[in-house]
Image 1 (tube, rainbow, N blue to C red):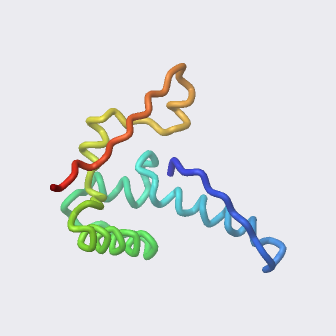
Image 2 (cartoon, one colour):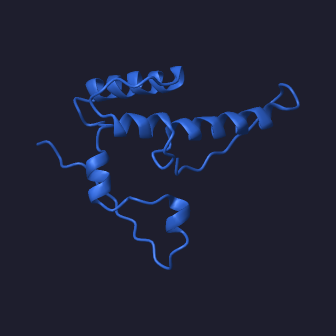
Length: 112
C-alpha cells in the first residue's frame, strides 16, 4: 500500500511477528488498487454498483465515510480520478525502477 511499517512485538507467542506480517500481506491483497482481484480494484471497476467485499474492507469503507463526515469533506477517499490524472498509475516498486521519481506534495487550499 505504499507505506513503511514498523512492527514491534512485546511478549506474545513466538510466531507473533510472522502472524503480523502475514496479516499485512493479506490486507495488501485486499486493498491494493494495483491487484486486479483486490476488493478495492473490484470496487473501483464496479463504481456505483454493489460489490461483495471482505468484512475488513467493509470496515475500511465505513471508517472512510466517517472520516469524510467528521472532517467536513477534507478527508475524501473518492479521489481515484484525480490520482490517475496526477499520474499515479504505477506501484511505488515500479516507480523505483526508473531513474527519476518526482514527488509532489499537495496541501489543501485554506478555507478562509
